[in-house]
Length: 188
Image (cartoon, rainbow, N blue to C red):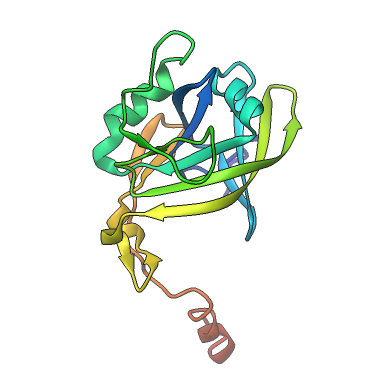
């Protein structure tokens, strides 16, 4: 028997990202796990309206999405629990820039995506940003044939209901392939 939990967003865990922006010309990072893929060229992120980083994103209409690895968990958690309005986060990570102004990226993050904001949706408690990647920078050691191997990234996964960070498990099947077994053997 299934238990009804009510209107729960049961899509956790999600990858933790560090969103980079400049607020009043100063680098700022925030820990955000509410990110998504809209289509092949558009990403989304949702942020509570009171977050300091929103000002910089709206000013510059750019941001970076940095995917930290497990060994970055202490600093990653820290930038999510202190506000850039109260604490200067510009020196927590070594930053670099790509093509876009206002979108600092984290040198130690295995994956960094600089993005142009193309739309903002005003929700009652959150702003939802739609951003298109301009460039994606990856550490070479996480690539296999120029494709990202997430087992080498070791991303941090966020589970809001339990208030925990999780580690990625192992790959166990091939997409667009394993399902063909059903066509051949409907007893599965």
